[in-house]
Image (tube, rainbow, N blue to C red; front, side, top):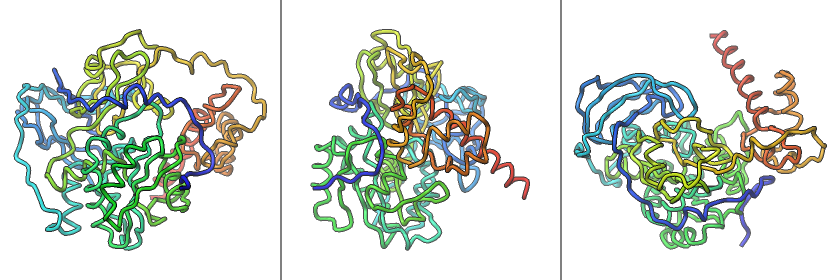
Length: 443
């Protein structure tokens, strides 16, 4: 059987063997929890509690402040001790709600529903009220994604089960332990799009997941499991769409423009919980791993829990790490402080004994063309990096700099150890900022 893929990409050491074979472990916070009001793309949520308020687990503590926004729920019962700026994984200070848990976990009552009795608008409303956002890292409010202008033109709903980022195994464990929720969640999305087929897109390094999902969908003529060639960044939205449908999109397009909707595993399971059980998004699976961690594992985490507590749950460090990353090694954020909260988009905590990147000594480009060969965006990374470093933003945009997906393949493969992705990323930020300014000026 042919494996579905795209042109370009790399094969870094995947590190998944460290955590993939251990079952998900439930962990509970021991102290305060911090809920940043910006855990999604769009307008920050607006706090609807005050200092001193007592809240229950599952109670809304911040409401969506606009269409492209998402509510936030308390994941514990306890007392609001502050509403103040707190640091997040990117290093920014973000207005946050702080709650001291009483360790009782008293919950609100949830309103369950039979999907068969719900209209399309009611399904979307339950997803919206449930605070579901893209949990693969983007944080785009899911109810917005599932409300395209022309729903009848959606032909594919793709479940991103690739999990191509090295070291991460949270989606793998979710598929192994709760595949039924993933399939049922996909069926809920398909109910919104009458002309769509469902695709469970899984890399072929997960044959056990593929077998489980095929068994669960063998009698469903609207859902198919597609085996993807294992390669990074196979889970990138653009490249996943191309690999599974042969439809291409660029930076000016949305997946809906190609008749596709893409959601990752955790998001689809969260949709199931919100629609069927009436449970808002309060938990997620986080991989805590790396060669510096004593006991790498996947944890079911209350959103708002401190990263330092997760390190303790994993047995602490066996050696002092030189680098700790929130997310995976290719696209994650390096941390300088573990005193930051998990959020809806927190996927992993990677603790490495050696910081190989800082040891690299960049040298002159040798014009080998390897960055061009592996680039999944089919742009010229060396040229874009030079243009960005020179501040030639007009030339950068003309050379299709906005088509870079910032996957890191070029930096990974470069024998001269040049920080190509960093330079291109800076160039993209400046071009997009200028476009935003120009758009604001026109208004």
